[in-house]
Image 1 (cartoon, protein in one colour):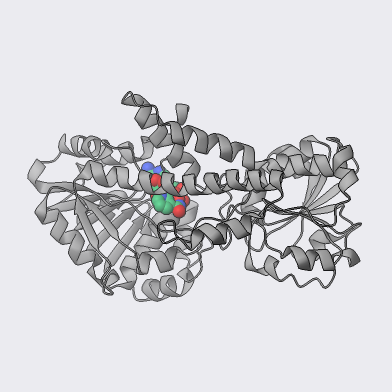
Image 2 (image 1 turned 45 degrees about the horizontal axis):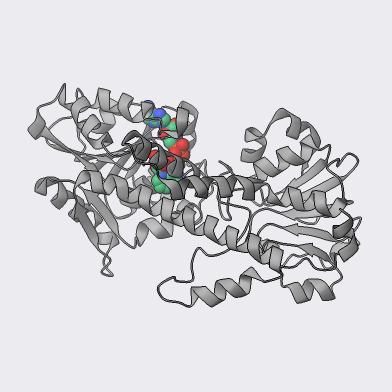
Amino acid sequence: MNIAVIGTGYVGLVSGTCFADSGNEVACVDIDEDKVVELRDGQIPIYEPGLKSIFKRSQKEGRLTFTTDMETAVQDADIVFLCLPTPPGGDGQADLSAVMQVAGELGGMLNGYTVVVDKSTVPVGTGDRVESAIGTQLDKNKFDVVSNPEFLREGAAVEDFMYPERVVVGTESERAAEIMRTLYEPFVRSGNPIIVMDRPSAEITKYAANSMLATKISFMNEIANICERVGANVDHVRRGIGTDSRIGPRFLFAGIGYGGSCFPKDVQAIHYTAGQHGYDFKILDSVMKVNEMQKVSIVAKMEEYFGTDDFSGKTFGLWGLSFKPETDDIREAPALYIADELVKRGANLVGYDPEAISTFRQATTEEVKENMKFVHSQKDALKDIDALLICTEWNEFRRPTVDRFQDHMNQPVIFDGRNLYDLDRAQKAGITYISVGRSPVNVERNKLDEA
Ligand SMILES: NC(=O)c1ccc[n+]([C@@H]2O[C@H](COP(=O)([O-])OP(=O)(O)OC[C@H]3O[C@@H](n4cnc5c(N)ncnc54)[C@H](O)[C@@H]3O)[C@@H](O)[C@H]2O)c1
């Protein structure tokens, strides 16, 4: 098939590359000229495991091309995918300006019957708006608008796209549904379902999935907060409930909250949609509040440990800047908020991340930039620091190459926002170790009580 993908970001680039890998001719469009030049030159602007090899292969074989010229890209397309950003606008509602702008232009550009697929995460009813916008310039039987929400996870995007647990297709048109089934069949050969439903249900499905996952995270973080107060261990509780098949073991890890380009904005957006329809989505209200608190809970623990909220003269190391491992995406990353709070309290920072240093540097505040040094190894981030903070659970932090923290740091104090280490080992290693939902290790009790 001939496919045009409009918007070549995390979703567009991964989708376009994977569709090309399965034999389709794919033209990826973006308004960012520099990005298009880079991609044509064979450079991938994001870090995503496994993407490079399939990208190179499809590009070499001419099945994957990049352009800023939307009209040329879409005129012979059987399917046009909209993979455009839908960032939070005012009041938490999704900003649909990019989607609607492109929809407004498409009607005058399409040739022959075309399926226009909304892959962006959009509020219910957006498919209708896109259909009306295209319909002002194009006969209704020359196109169908389909909702096909994307469930890939950054950091495992290629794997998720190639082997989706399900494909959701929202359309009432049998013709469009058949084209979508043909496109996706190579990706679900192991039998995972292509679920065809009406368009509004497909639009809601994406928000329901992300809200449910965010709810699980905030719920476990609240359980962790109780564990800290009563001397229980959230890891034991997690195993205790995760073995219940009704609950399941995944997404039950306590930590310093969810971030990224999706959960925060999607929870806000469906909360807003509910409000627009006269419904108060109370659970999500709490999910958001818990997450706001949890993101900076580690700073409160530091204040408690050091007995002050003035960190002048102190230097802290930060391991992990991306919002989760295996990505360079820092959108809504807890590390951004934590760095900001620490610098406001007078601290100097040393940051290390395997992939996200440059994206973090671009996104952080001037004040943080002035007080934060970036280094390129875990070890260098430990030199002469007063405490280490672990913000992202990159694999390399689980078994760090440093032999002994005390050989590098002023004092071996770790605040772990991702519960990477075993409490007994930390105890034996003589490390002061403060994590989430578990008792602090090697902390003089009176030090915390005095504070
Ligand atoms: N990132 C994820 O993990 C993920 C997962 C599932 C769904 N989604 C959803 O997919 C959508 C895209 O997300 P993303 O993370 O890929 O965004 P992104 O910001 O990484 O990429 C969007 C791209 O669109 C381009 N663009 C903006 N306006 C344009 C226009 N008018 N014409 C052409 N190109 C334009 C931008 O330059 C950018 O390259 C969002 O709705 C998001 O919620 C994202």
